[in-house]
Each structure stands twice: as structure tokens, then as C-alpha cells.
Image (cartoon, rainbow, N blue to C red; front, side):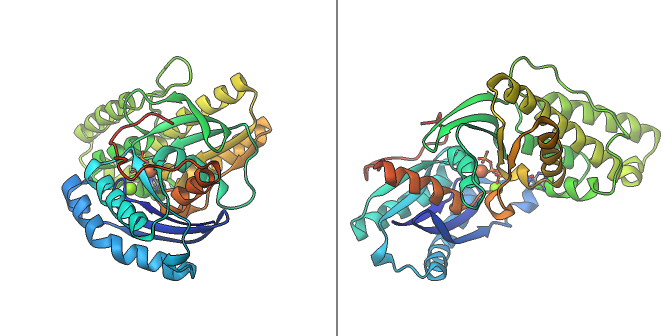
Length: 333
Ligand code: ATP
Ligand code: MG
Ligand code: FE
């Protein structure tokens, strides 16, 4: 089974080839045009996808050594995401499936983030829990089989990635700020400043209060000392990151206790965060979990994870008709 997968839900244009469950290539074109706007501009994202998609697909095929005539199916991200961006990938995938007369497979982006944990060994055993932390989502997913997963906790407002990016913006750091907060946090004291932990019932999350707390904290301190941020940047970043991580980890511990599941994965762009990766190992050791973390290239948006999900859907015969349409929002399948 050889599948070409295309990811275009946000601002990464990516293509991957998977053969019998093994990802042979995963090409990612990042869009830099958004940096100057401090966030992703949807109209510019779709245009950049349009420019990138042919060379990215071409390179993914060449690198895998698979000829397009030998493909068994074409997969694409169907939802959720920016509609204009999704349309570029879905139209391309449909055209290619039609031209090659092979099946089409639509993939749910957040389910694919979870399945990124199956790209490399060791793979988690079912059932497992996955903390999916990305730019648009924060979820605890209970996964019973590759195609059977449910969200048992999620954010009521901002996503963890947004919490990082919005905090970074308040500190005057460029977009996306998550990786920069991570970088400065490495040299800072995580216990220097105390930010509040919201009391949210059940397994849900909330990050908007943290953002407000940081805003007031900075206003107050800058009023007393104009160069407060410059002088204390590393400690501020470390303290913010520490709070985001403890909010995530406390709910994950709760989810593991409630379900009795000790197979624990992480997925999504924020799982690239070094503090979160360390915390997972620490909590894992303490609570007797088996912890799984995807390689960096499979944490942020990539077609490798779309290909992995497509492999399972192909095995299940779960194909999409050619008149299928992408959608900006969609619940789990
Ligand atoms: P979604 O999957 O919810 O649609 P997305 O695909 O845009 O959102 P990803 O690409 O998975 O999200 O992740 C991007 C997010 O990850 C950004 O918010 C970015 O700041 C954050 N991020 C990436 N690296 C790090 C890091 N090292 N530390 C903290 N955050 C990070
Ligand atoms: Mg992105
Ligand atoms: Fe994503």
C-alpha cells in the first residue's frame, strides 16, 4: 500500500509518502509571509499553498522513490483548518486521485496529530491517552483503536499554543512566540514569578485567564521599572512556561487516574516544547506511565501524520467520494 498524503490546514504546505505503514518522505514548506503580521493571514496562506503544493508533492514523491503510477491512494486533510487553505490541498488531492483513478481519503487533522505517535517505534498500546497541544487545540484524547478516539477533555477558550504565542506577544517577541519562550525559559527560573492556575471542573482546560494575569503583571511591573521585561525576560518566560505545563500535566494525571490508563502520548506543535517533553518524562516516571513523544518533525503540522492516518483508513476501506468537501470545523469521526 503506497499513499501520497497532503496537509494544508494552516500555514504549512506538506506532502508525505507512506508505504506499508512506513513514512518514506515528509516534506514541509513553512510560510514566512505571516511573520510581519504577527499571525497567520488566511488569504496569504491559501496563496502560498497554491505556490508550494506542486514542488512539495514532487519532492515528496522523488524522495520516497515511489512513482505516482504506483500509488494506491491520495490522502488529504479534510478538517479542521482554514477553509481557503484546506481547499487548496483537497482540490489538488481530488484532481490527482481522479487522474490516477485511485481512491481518495479525507483525514481529520486532529486525529492525525494523535496518530503521529505511530510513525516511529516504540508505538503506544491501546487504549492510550493523548495530550494534543497545538496552535488551535488542547485536548485529552482517549484512543481505543487507530480509527476510534474520543475527546475526554478540551480547552474552553485559548489553546496551549495560543497561550504561548499570546504571552510571547505581550513580551514583545515575534510570531510564533512559542519556540522563543521555550528558548529563553531554558535559562530562567520557573519559580521566580507565580501565575494563577485556573480551577476548571473535570478534564477541561482554560488559558484565557493566564493571558490576562500576565498582561496585568507586566503592566504593573513596567510601571515600576521601564526595562522590566528586558532585564527579567528569561525568568518571566520560564515562569509562564512552567504554569502552562503544570496546567496541562495536572489534567493529564487526573485523566490517567480516572481512566486507569498508563499509556500516555503527546502530540501537536506544543509537544516540541522542551519543558513539556521533560515534564512528561518526569511525571511518567512518578506515575508509572509509558510515555510516547513524536519526533520533532511530526509534532508541528506535517503530512507524515496525515499519511499514517490514511494508512489505517485504507486498511479499513474508509474512502471518500470525489464530491467530498473540506470543512473549517468538524467533530471527531
Ligand atoms: P491545530 O493543529 O490546532 O489546527 P496548528 O496546526 O496551527 O493548530 P501546530 O502547527 O501543531 O498548530 O503547532 C503550532 C503551535 O505550536 C504554535 O502555537 C507554536 O507557538 C507552538 N510551538 C511550536 N514549538 C513550540 C515550543 N518549542 N514551545 C512552545 N510552543 C511551541
Ligand atoms: Mg502552523
Ligand atoms: Fe496542527
